[in-house]
Image (cartoon, rainbow, N blue to C red; front, top):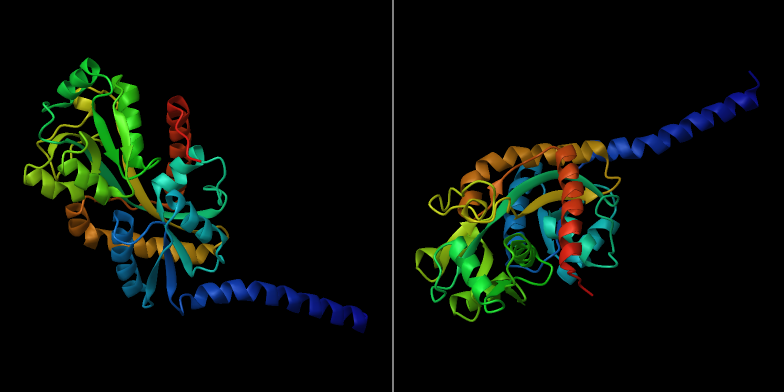
Length: 325
């Protein structure tokens, strides 16, 4: 072979090896520095609490610090957009709420991310069931009585939510659609203020996170009428589901998962998945007590959940003509 041609071939092979090595070496060495876990909501809420618990356990298993980075704003869009644009090197993860990835695409005309193309789904973590509660002054003690009152006095009942477009808002939208009622939505800046006004009697009812509402239920400051998942909750086994109490087929819950920027090396994504699935069983008791139902899933199942929920919510939101500017 011509010496010049041989030299050229050797250089080409060396270049190919050099381009392949960084990805392999990166995956083998990962992680060798702290991992950033972006939470697209402010500190103190359910998303933040879950992220800090998961982050601590994940860091212990990976032997690096997992730093929770709260980037709230625009219904979760700001932090989610930041995660989408982060380097796909395994050192940025997103605590992904269903409201942001599955609901927001139908609420906002423009988003700083594509929920399907911009992320590598790793695993669903938990499902968060809601409980429909009323203030004790509301003269109903069942979902059927609530529907009857709402139809007898249209517009007289109000329901609080943690914000327009949040799952607690759309739970009421879906209820109105399926029950044929017209209860008025009162949005708040977070679940805390909404719960405070419910307990104070400023609003009639609320679809609330079960874990955070449980103390008010036990003290009699909020009356549970129904849970929003297909099966009854082990936290409130005596409370029927909304579906079995007069609104057949009614089902809604929030979910949270972990995703990485699209293009994250498969070996790293698989490692994160395996560690997450490994830590959830040991956290099950504590998570359930807080209203989180542990799930754990394959990346493929999580990706399918995101796509299916985007399609489901687009229909519900379009029918209700709900929009966020």
